[in-house]
Amino acid sequence: MICITGDMHGDYSRFGDSRIARLKKGDFLIVCGDFGFVWDGSAREKQILKKIGKKRFYTLFVEGCHENYDLLEKYPEEDFCGGRVRVISDRLMCMKRGSVFNFQGKTFFAFGGGHTKEIEIRRESKTWWERELATPEEVKFGKQNLEKCGNKVDYIVTHEPPASVKEFLNFEVRQISYMHTFFDTVKDECEFKKWFFGKVHKNKLIPPKYQCLFEDVEVIKTEGKK
Image (cartoon, rainbow, N blue to C red; front, side, top):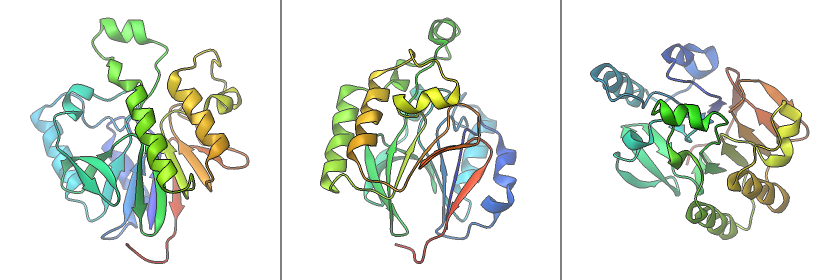
């Protein structure tokens, strides 16, 4: 079984959700950005990360706007289920932007990163990292991986939505980045069943197949494990 949820912002109580609690050994929890548990590098934080990594299921996340990229980039990168990850602690991992993964027979295209409207404020307070924005190299990596699977995956997991979806979420449409336009290209050219994203702290389905998640948990049942 695979569970997908939205921004956690370092709130450990979210693991107490009944749907997440049902996950078994070898199952997956996927977080759509703003995981938030890698933030200050404190001893307490390291204990929590170790605790998450020791859970019987895998916890994977894409980056959002509220991550400490300096700390994230210190973790080792390796292959996992067809894609690339940074291993934070045992079964806790950050999915590399542009990777395609196979979890229990289902394919997932993962692309983290965000675009913060309060960039100037957060830059001054040293809580903003330029690496939250996608680079041309990351976009190229994502395009190449999608092409390898014939531009067809089961699910897409991001933090930001495509630009054309933002208007349905009371977003400022003018707040568009290179990443949003790339997502619009993926939206038009890639075949997929559902696109999950976080960002706006809402639980909302945008028909036919765009799912904004916050505290809600989407459950994907699978027939077998690979």
